Amino acid sequence: MAIKTFEEYLKSLRKLKPTVYMFGEKIENPVDHPRIRAGINATGATYELTQHERYKNLMMTMSPLTGELINRFTLPPQSIEDLVMRVKVNRALGGYVGTCHQRCTGLDCLCSLSIVTYDIDKKYGTQYYNRFNEFLKYMQKNDLTANASVTDVKGDRNLGPHEQPDKDMYLRVVDQTKEGIIVRGAKAHQTGSVSCHEVIVLPTRAMGKGDEDYALAFAVPSDTKNLIHVVGRNSMDTREIEGVDCGNIRYSKYCPTLIFDEVLVPWDRVFMFREVEFAGEMVNRFSAFHRQSHGGCKSGKIDAMTGAALMMMEYNGTSKVSHHKEKVINMIHMAETLYGCSLAASYEGKKEPSGTYFIDPVLANASKIHEGKEMAEATRQMIDIAGGFVADLPSDRDFENPEIGELLKKYLKGATGIPVEKRIKMLRLVEKMAMESADTISDIHGGGSPAAHRLTIFRESDIDYKKNCAKRLACIED
Ligand SMILES: Cc1cc2nc3c(=O)[nH]c(=O)nc-3n(C[C@H](O)[C@H](O)[C@H](O)COP(=O)(O)OP(=O)(O)OC[C@H]3O[C@@H](n4cnc5c(N)ncnc54)[C@H](O)[C@@H]3O)c2cc1C
Image (cartoon, rainbow, N blue to C red):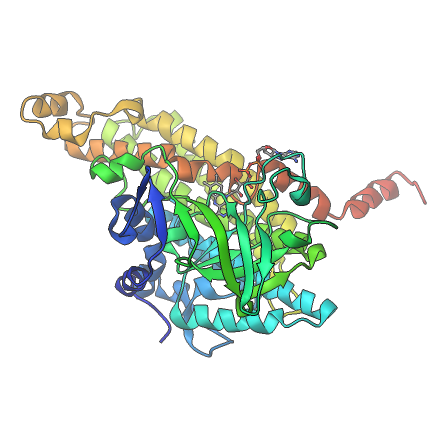
């Protein structure tokens, strides 16, 4: 059976030897590095839950490609039901890990490739779709995780790829041989890249004439020669390294910068090569899928945030305070509207010529705009309910200190009869969910900046239909 357990996932990562740097040092054993391990644990939840009675039917399905039971994170949707399950799985995981589980991005790349490689072949008679399906079979049979290498570093935002003074600001092909293509460039904010077996590269934007060298899609193993992962800072990262005050049982997010320092990509892993007019379609499909994924997982994160707010009310003695109840109702409302929008994008999905189902892009982007604003609002409400100790709670090391620990516990008590340790733990979780920069900033920029979501809504909406509604009512006939 092509399903890995959490332990098997860890074992498979240990076999890889990626080049990883953090804080100026090379990390020889990333799997056991506490900072990276917390991210691996979050992705590991997508493996763990396949063994969990409550979640296993959600997490697994049959592959039409291999005929085997597979993890849903390796399945480009083949029906409306599959589109709906994407949202449900992400919501369950968001509540389970309370942060980003980091496995949706790779699936969203697989979804985009399963549509666009077919479209390119139809126009040019190329063989990308077959190649991609071989890759997909490999992903499914081995239950592998991929990351989405989409965001180029982009240099001067006012200039397109080939106009940049430094030609490597967008990842590009610099040579080609019998074996494959050699690529150079860097991708930024690579969510969980060291937790992945494969790195899938897609173009970051629509491209035009002159940008052919940049119009590339391919996949390489995450430990490919000359591929360098540089794990970025995060607002709470040293807590994991110190092993204290982490706030969340064992899950976190990290986003390396990925440098392709002349990486060889074998031809059988190249899924788009210089078909410049398809760069826009590739990234637009990916972005729509990914913005919808966010609607699922972030509504799940609000579930955990709402739970934390309710527990803080119990621990502080404010359960009966009416404005707190109102705030909790607001949080539930935000989660459900986000979830509803994301589900609606699934129900309005359509079958593409390749057989893969595509979500409704307007609803998917509406969901992402909603997320950008409402996650910040849900965070504000949770902090309001929890109180100021979210900002400056003493360390667990102070609570354990024989000289001041008991004094601190005396003064941090909350509601009568509630052990102070519970209040301390919940405050720390609230801090983590509110302040983990790698996760909270993705509410805004993940899947593209907010302006991109808005432009997409305008571009994909049926503007003429809306005009015609108004013209008919006003008795204007053209
Ligand atoms: C936590 C996190 C996780 C992420 N994970 C991934 C991942 O796994 N894989 C991946 O590929 N990417 C990932 N991203 C990247 C994300 O998609 C980008 O951050 C996003 O697309 C914005 O790009 P940027 O960061 O380069 O900002 P910029 O593109 O520089 O945008 C900054 C601001 O400038 C505006 N702007 C920029 N250029 C123009 C222009 N020409 N015209 C008008 N306005 C402009 C934007 O609208 C925005 O307001 C992640 C980002 C974050 C924060």
